[in-house]
Each structure stands twice: as C-alpha cells, then as structure tokens.
Image (cartoon, rainbow over all chains, first blue to last red; front, side, top):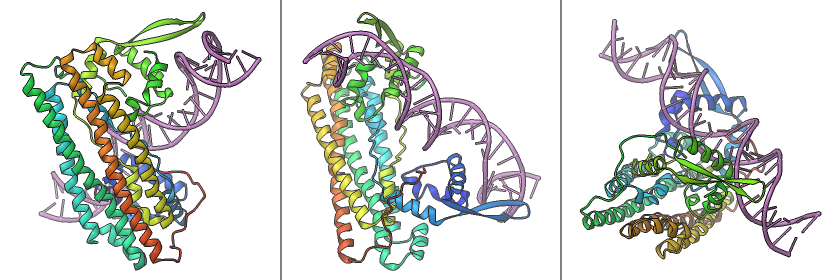
Length: 196
Length: 196
DNA sequence: GTAGTCATGTAAGAGGTTACATGATTAG
DNA sequence: CTAATCATGTAACCTCTTACATGACTAC
C-alpha cells in the first residue's frame, strides 16, 4: 500500500500499540526501501501526480520474522505510575483528577480494545482478512489467536486499572472529608518548562 | 545530594518507573540548575577533588507541584504487545520463549515491587524516611499511600501478565502438539538492522 | 600498588514529536 | 469554485542510549 493508506489504517491496527505520525512514517518507508526491506512501485495519480505503492521484499519478510522471534527488551518506563508516587505534591483535588482521568482513559480504551478483539475473533477486520487470504488455512487460527490475545491482555489490564483508580478515589475522598481545611500544596496554574 | 548519590539511589526508587543512566542525569542536573530549579553547593572532595551537592530551590519545588498536578499524557506505546500481535511470524518455539520470558520478567519484577511496597508501608525505605522527617505528621499517610499504591498497581498487573502468558503457553503447546511437523516460519539467527 | 568506589563529564547517533510546507484530485 | 481527500515530504528540536573518557580517594 501507499504511505497514505498505511497512515489511515494505523490507528485501528498497529497504532494501538505503536502510535506514529506521518512525519515518522514517510521517512521510515524510504529508509526501509533503501535498506531493501521494502520495494516501491511508482504509480501515476491522475494526470500529473505520482504515488509509491510499497510491498515487502523477501529480505523484509525475513526481517519481520527475525524481529518477531527476537526477545523483548522490557523497559518498564511508566510516567503515569511515576506521577502517582508523587501525588502527595499535588492537592487532593488534583489527585482526584488524576484518578478520574485514569478511569476515563482506560474506560475509553477498553471499549476500543474490546471492539478490536471482536473484529479479530470474528475475522471481520479488513487487514486480518487480507492476511488470512495469503496464508494457508492451517495457520489461520494462530494468526487470529496471537492478535486477539494481545487485545484481551489490554482489556484485562484496563479492568484492573479502573479498579485500582477507584481505590485511589476512595482514598482521596477520605482525605478531603478528613481535612475540610485546604492542604498545604495548592494547585498552580502557571506552566513552566517540563523536565525529564 | 550529589549526582552520584542520586544515581546510586535511582534503581531502588524513581528508577522503578523511570530508569535513567548517568549520561542522562549529570547533564539534566546542570540544566535544572541553569533553569533555577536546583542549586548546587560546591564541596571539596579530599585534597583536590570537587563535588556538587544539589538541593531544590523554591522554583524547583513549585515546578514539582505543577508537574504532579498536571494531567497525564497517555501514550499506550507497548512494544511487547505489538510483538504479540505478530507472533504468527515466529516459530511456535520462539513464541514459547516469548511467553516464558514474559513470565520470568514479571515474576522478577513482582518480587521487587512487593519488597518495595513493604518497605514503604512499614516506613523503612531510607528516602521515604528522609521525606517524612521534613513534612508534618498529618501528611505522612498520604505520602506513604500514594507511593505504595503505585507499586501495588504494578504487583496486580504482574499477576495478570503472568496468568495471561500462561494462557499463551497453553496455546503454543497445543500448536506444537498438533503439528509435529515444523511450521513454515523458521527461526532465523542472523541479526539485521532494527526498524521502528 | 591495585582494585573498588566516588565523582563527573562528552560525543555520536537513533528515534520521536511538532510544526511547517506543498500540491493534485474528486465530489458537490 | 470550493472543500475534502489523496499524497508526500522537510526542519527544528528534544530525549534517550551507548560508548568513550578522566581522575581522585580508600581499603587492602
């Protein structure tokens, strides 16, 4: 497909786990082409325009298999949890918003992940169908299973995050009940430069 | 404390959620000093050496409160889950290793997170004790609670990840039983350049 | 004297984000 | 003719990783 096609599919496929903007995708396609992982067929668009339709080369397919077989590098960097450990520096009201936003985020994601898992299990997802078409039937189950499993892991995690944040809300509400007086840490509005 | 002190505390405190190497920390301390968030007292080390002992300025404390109160930006980028969705490109043996490594990773982390949560709840963690000493007693509960909660979230997640990966193992083992013949995707050994 | 710890940096490069920038085609 | 969609890029900047580099102090 073209870079444009890829971008438009992205947020309902690979983008769930690896969001990427167009400023990343176009140069990356060029790099992968240069490295021999992709090849581009240049096709006309209308009278004057041109577009590049990419496909994987055998080297690209082999690199995909290599990457899929390679061990994961676990980094466990998590800005959300890091912030939690420092919520005592925020007002209880701001802490409340932290947990409320956490619930809202995972509730939204859960819906999207559930929808995606269903579209995979029922084999209705367009990109999945395209892939199944070019692979032998005996592989179909695994193709569906691994993809669905990834989303089901996220769904289970979302449930856990929501339960956890509800515990957080309960704690914050107790804090707010116990001191009617405002806590020392106030909520600043000014925005300063962010630091790592 | 000095940059060196900070680095040596890092992997048992903030480094759980934001690992960072020394090549990041020293320049960042300089930058934060330049921006007025930190100030350094230059102290001698022995006869010739020097060291910089940093402390937070009021501006630094206010930036900390601002950051703690600021909404999270959820990105949901997850290379591990992304790889899962493509495990059909690996051999069942490689997929097996994926899930085994997942279990090993979270089992190890869980132990560390549990230990940390206990050290926080029992108020034995040195950095926590130092912080409690400079804050009024009525804040102590919240200081401990927010930190412990972050680790307890991770512990719950670890349990979930392990259960999930065991489901993955069961599926892979079924695949291996069902086809005694090797699957089409073989496990390449050669290392090629990694791509985003 | 030598190994381990204390102490602090720099350089090159990879990867990612935000913003800027352009222009053709198609549907109404 | 005008708005939406198709289509592709570049530039500046920030962050992070890996590797390189130095040297003093302390305990044995």
